[in-house]
Every structure is written in C-alpha cells, then in structure tokens.
Image (cartoon, rainbow, N blue to C red):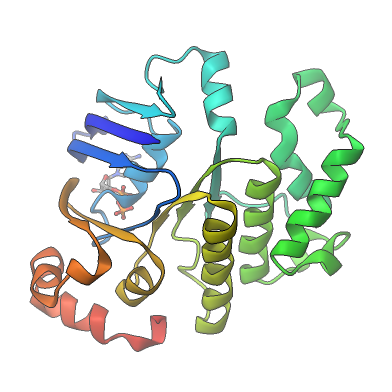
Length: 257
Ligand code: ADP
C-alpha cells in the first residue's frame, strides 16, 4: 500500500532526515514508528503525503508515485491519507462539525469548498464519524472548548469523513494524560480493526507501541534499525536503539503506558 524505495531526505541545512529507507507497508497494518527525538520519525511520516518533499528515491501510495505526481494527482493521493497531528490543529474558532466537514474538502472544486457547499451525506458522515469517536454530543461545540484528547479525536473523525484508507498519526498522544491517551489509542485501534484502515503512528512510548501495533519500526539517525513484530523487539534491541540509560528511562516509564 505504501512503498518507500531507497528514500533519502536531506534538509537544506545538510541534516540527513532519512537515509536510504526501503519499506513496504501493507493494507490494514498498525505500524508504530519509534526512536529518539530527531531520529526521523516525523520526516518519514510526512514524506508519505509529501508535506516533506524527499530528496532522492520514490514513494508509492497504492501504486502511484508521489514524487512524479502532478498537482492534481497529488491532491487525489492526499485524499487517501488522513493526518492526525499535534501541530496540524483544528480551526479553533470553528465548531466541531465544521472542522470534521473540512475532511470532505478534497472531494470538491475550489469554488464549492470556498462556500462550504457540503451535501446531506457529508453532514450524515460527520455525525457518524463523531459518534464512532464518542463525541456526537459535541457537534456544535466550538473546537477551542475541547480538551486536548477530544481535539485529537475530532481529528480522527475528520480523517474518517475524508474516507482515507491510510491514517498518519504524528505523536497524537504526546501531550495527553494516560487515560485520555488510552482513549485516543483505543479509537485508533478500533478504526484499524473494524474499518481496516492502515495506520502509521509515531510514538514516544515503547509500552504503547508494544500494546497497540502489529509492527514496530525503529529509526536511528534517519535509518531503520528495527522492523518487525512487537514481540521481536527485545530489550537488547531496544538498548541498541536508545542507548542503555535512555532505554531504562523509556521502558521503566510506566506513566506513559
Ligand atoms: P523525530 O520526528 O524523530 O523527532 P524529525 O523527523 O523531526 O525527527 O527530524 C529528523 C532530523 O531532521 C533532526 O535532526 C531534525 O533536527 C532535522 N530536521 C527536521 N526538520 C527540519 C527542517 N525543517 N530543517 C532542518 N532540519 C530539520
């Protein structure tokens, strides 16, 4: 479903964000990407929808090359990819309904989107998506009145109305308390298991990666240093990814679990 073919990213300042990444993500996988800060997790995730343009190599999404896509093709490819991120925020002054509806914008011409001409089906999908993340009662609430966890779940609902088969989640639980974290992670698990969405998620927490994902990819200095089943990520492997001291902090940190 997503193929990285020898992908490298060098930022203008010379930093190597990604180095020779080869990767195939299959439909329906729940892939956690772990690694230290600066390891390249965010770069990898954002390369998938070209929010970060790659320097060399190619990425294919459902058989279509993202580097060779025309503007129009890129728009179509992006329609298939939902993004949930701390930094990709909601329009705070708009209602939850409007924010979720905006997930439909990729389906309309600029004219229609400018005037917010959504169909009855779109309104129906919005209610449905909010119900599936437990927020149907927040339809008309202003988004800035929601908690951080609720905002992340509105972003999940937006990805659902977008009908994107692929969801990229860039540290969606980084600043949430443990209980809210669990709710957001459970929502992601549910849409993965019941709707078959392919999920790529960047996580700081190793316990969360182990609990929720079907596959873990670890990055170090822009390279893949582990790619396999959570059970195969032994403490020794973790130590080599994180270094001994940080490894002990990460695995010992149950507050994140
Ligand atoms: P992670 O998500 O694992 O914390 P990132 O993908 O954000 O890592 O960053 C990988 C490396 O690329 C880091 O060294 C970071 O400083 C660098 N980097 C990220 N974005 C930029 C940018 N826009 N310009 C220059 N360097 C960047």
